[in-house]
Length: 494
Image (cartoon, rainbow, N blue to C red; front, top):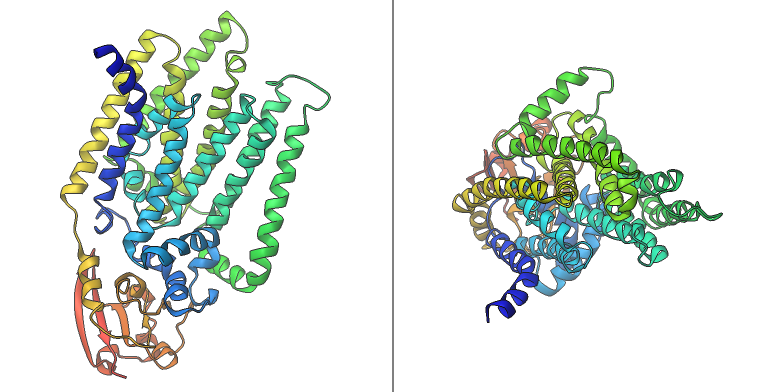
């Protein structure tokens, strides 16, 4: 009886772990974002990302210029609409959408007979990491984009081992393109698939034929096709607003010539050299050193260790290129935590693929890898469980309060408005000085509700700079403490 039960349990074990992870994530669907964010981040952006879509579903109109979110994230936005139509425009719906898509991607890795072990390591090492665990249940585009990168990796691996190579190559490029369709700021990953294919081609890791460059040419052709589709279907119709948003949002993120190392050091100390990430830094160094040692030892015995395992080579090269590309995030000026999510994930993936290759080299290496996995998992679960115990529901409370009001045709305005008006189904518009919806916003939009931080820092003083005293012109107001901010809700009487 024991042996048949063991044969049944062992194949199901990874899926049991995935189910446990998913159930744990579900317990956060209605909770506030975690409290260690270095900016407003998910507190405001979950609402802002969805605001144009909620306006479309609830009020049956579409205006891409009312907010800067949809023009940057068209694929994320439009694929979220069916969920809103089916389940309603609730915060938990947008979170569930991202979470289920992420779980599906993990399931695809676990189900594949070649990558099930790698998928298990990815689940244990990547998706339990504190930041990644949190963003897996946020209604934001970042994890959605990472999921597409993982699907691109999955199909490029299948191309590497010769499984339906033409179709796999097309799907790999398609999903990498969907990544930046989902958020244009991820356009930098476009080079990774052709880079891996190019390296495999010129290094002759595949059989040399007169068509050995066919895969590279097809890759470039597919990329051009998807770029032209985006250009024609999205950029051209919205190019003025698109360029405006990109110019405003990009101008303060980079400063090419000043304080390069000081800024990298600052971001590293603030975001990377912290308790929730530090153990990954140590493990990354260990795994890469171990992999380098193994490579040198193997090459001493016979040539082409990586050549003998094309799949592992493609995995490692893809993830290594991704990690190197993400290093530029450390150079950003005061990046929100979500901007660094792909950096954290690519680093965790580099550890995963390195340990995956190391454990195949012998019993001692497998034992050491198991120890590292256990330590990492234990540390991650400590922080994840701590986050579970410290859950708060401030956003849910203010949404319950706002939902009692009948807005009619009058909107709620302000950078926080989409966050506090989920349940009210009100039309919402963000307001930022010198950027969006800021010219005499009260007279222009006739809002029923104006939401602003007490010091107006969220809108860069969009109201007071124009002589608008919200307290004087409002019928009543109420202050909520949300995250680190005193949020004032000014009710206007119409």
